[in-house]
Image (tube, rainbow, N blue to C red; front, side, top):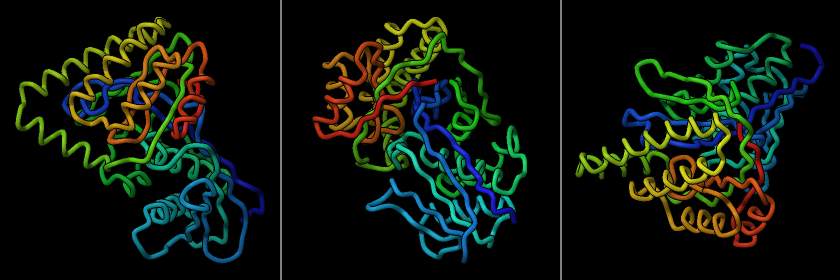
Length: 311
């Protein structure tokens, strides 16, 4: 094995429109962030080891093949197997500002940055359909049967319109300009499964009412595609606010989500919404004028926040 370093990177992702409604046949729109993860692979001694200094309390360290429930260790092991590096004496470090478990595609960015770095270390090509397939294998460790949205956006970059089906359909959305945004987050109050199953129970009790909400979110997503491609940030912001209102009505928002959204709007965002499954986690605020000021207001209120360009 060569002593050369291997490197790879991948962005996080945000859902701009359509989270939850996409489960019920409506379109969603997702885009890559300018923030993500970078992986470095180097020769070492002993079993393959992985270190992520910014995750967990005081950093996260695992070894391939470790027993126990750690999805990070199992995802690391699976990536090594995919690249034919199981058992090789190597060490991987993954760094970046992308937080874990708040709905910003951290597991997909982990998978794609790791796979790219391992492929670079081994000096084998890995891109296109092969990288998507490999990332899907690693993502199954985290999500069982992933929709494909996260790792596709993270691998391809840019902005995509997505519709579920027997074969998921992706279409590029050509942004007239990147979106100047603030991403803020708080700890999750429930898992993605909690949010999805809770909404399903409410929809089963009142199908006509909730199907109307989902259809309205689908219309917002289609209008959002048109506004994004026209570069109409004022309309994108209004549609963010509208989409967030529908998500609140669906019961997937939280006090933390509502507080972050309200703070962002109060300090100059032209629109803000939760992004991802909700029940805490992340929001996205569209901030064409003073993104730093919005981020500072959110941090001063006790939240985590970063400025990011989307798409």
